[in-house]
Amino acid sequence: MHARVARFESGDQSMTDELIGKVRERVDSGEPPPGAQGMLMLLDRDAGTSAGITFFENEQAIKDAEPAFEAMGASMPEELRGKRVSVEAYEVLFIDGEPGKAARVSSLQGSPDNFDEAAKTTQEVLPTVRQMPGSTGVVSLADRASGRALIVTLWENEEAMRAGEEQANQLRKQAAEGSGGEVVSVERFEVAVARMPATVS
Image (cartoon, rainbow, N blue to C red):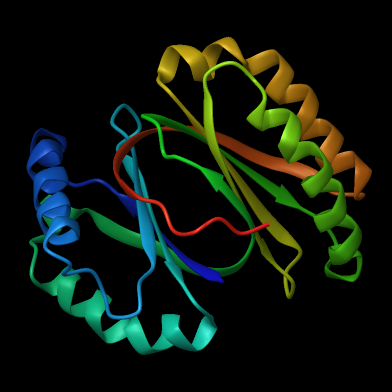
């Protein structure tokens, strides 16, 4: 399984709830791009940023769906959907659980030459994350070509996510150092819309 990760800078933040409503309508009606097996829409209202993670069977399916993504974007004014600032494709290493209402996204950077070791180290940490109070799910993504990885941890609510910050920091550091990489960024989001794909481990 692979994932397309698109990031946006929000337009008019007063229209955020309207945007969420429109995306939910499309998901509920089965309108997402052809081949999509699940999706997460993550929002940081304070920062005015968002991320859309859409899951597909493989990289070719992502490429085939790109015209549909472009059409979806064209159907909404930029002040509503925000400005798209990046699109990346990742291999899905691990998915487990349910979406919850809050998400922490940790970006790690390692060497492409050390990809397999990095993936192994990350896999060893994830079961511990799932056992933390308030944890509802985990998604692990990686790009073999660049050595970049994203770990998305999902929580019952923001309070549960914040309560586990110290332990999460330790586990994140362990995952990065164990593979010779580094933590690039940590972001916290509201889970606005979610349809989780089948478990991958």
